[in-house]
Amino acid sequence: MTDSRPVVTRFAPSPTGYLHIGGARTALFNWLYARGRGGKFLLRIEDTDRARSTPEATEAILKGLEWLGLDWDGEPVSQFEGRERHAEVAREMLANGTAYKCFSTPEEIEAFREAARAEGKSTLFLSPWRDSDPATHPDAPFVIRLRAPREGQTVVRDAVQGDVTFGNDQLDDMILLRSDGTPTYMHAVVVDDHDMGVTHIIRGDDHLTNAARQIQIYQAMGWEIPTFAHIPLIHGPDGKKLSKRHGAVGLHEYAASGYPAAAMRNYLARLGWSHGDDELFGDAQAKEWFDLSGIGKAPARLDFKKLEHVSGYHIAGMDDGQLMQEITAYLKETGAPALTELQASRLVPALSSLKAKAKTLPALLDQGHFALTQRPMEIEEKAATSLDTVSRGILFELTAALQNASWSRDDLEATVKQIGESHGLGLGKIAAPLRAVLAGRSSTPSVFDMMLALGREETLARMQDHAG
Picture 1 (cartoon, helix red, strand yellow):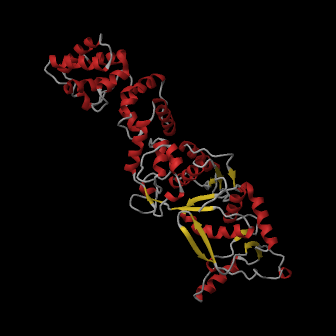
Picture 2: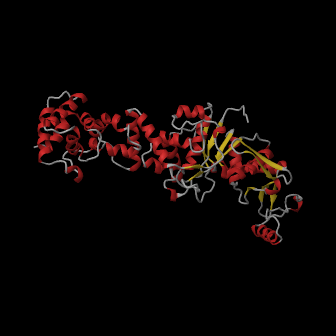
Picture 3: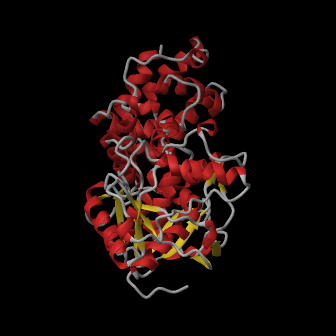
């Protein structure tokens, strides 16, 4: 399936809540497809449902996309703002005979369906006004319905699902314009996609039936039909439709859990799409590789272990400046206090050792606790057990010996080893009390990594607090 037009994709969420992880993946697929081909990625807020759409939800969606690092072209389009244009197209269809006025009341439609049920017939509403003489039209409220073909088939030529065929006798004359003059969502979507020049519609496969009905509007208007790609939904680890019982479903929850945005882009790209056996990659590779042919037909399953693995890979590969930006954004997301200049100055030298093991940002900050805490430190009960009279005496001796050390790793290791051997102790026995006085904990990074990050003055001050 080829399309010679410049690529234009869109993400069109309804602002009725937070940005769901499934929506985030849909946005990512559209972004990757457009950006990898020098095309445009547009954003449309489908806010026609005024009762459920809120400015707060719109703001949450924009914030979520910004956090994920997906930039869009131009200003976000409001579907509600285009209602006059949607109505204009419906009236144009009325004029060219591809739509008609229907005066049937809701009560009459329900009576038709009840009678059809009783007779075991299809409840698909067949309007008696479809072929009526305009001279017989009453002065009463009416809707504008699509004059859909009654015979033959409508085929959705889908880049993921293949050709999907719908019998036209199974598709009704859907309403384009309600009796109050407002457009329906199904109609507005087509008009917006056409007017925005969208060439590829990549969305969840729960919209597949909608595509057949929307294609009929394209055909009625003589508009070029875009390429459709309906992607399977995301399921939980148990294979069932994703819901809150599986854990985090909102993108904001992943941000607050400390997964870097780059890791989320990598992980979400692999949820339902593949490029050979490649699991770990950055944006440049993703944009180059991403293609609709790589999207599978089966629902993808969330795998939190795999997400942690991907997250650890991206944290380890970040330079210090980038990682500090991620930490700053994470603290802001969770409402935690920002790092002070002093804390940052001690954390940065420790990042090279911390990021090699951390799977998430909170795990990194937990291991970097020693750099963030201040004297006098509280020492955890388990760590305090290593501070007996003998170890305090050794710390006193070690503090004096370190006064003149060059503060290189080799010199620090040699000095600690020498003091330990003079007491018949190995490095492990000396390390425990050092962990206690430098971090207040028994589980810490290497004592030498901590010493180098803290510097001579702070290291010796912490040791002196407990030596003697």
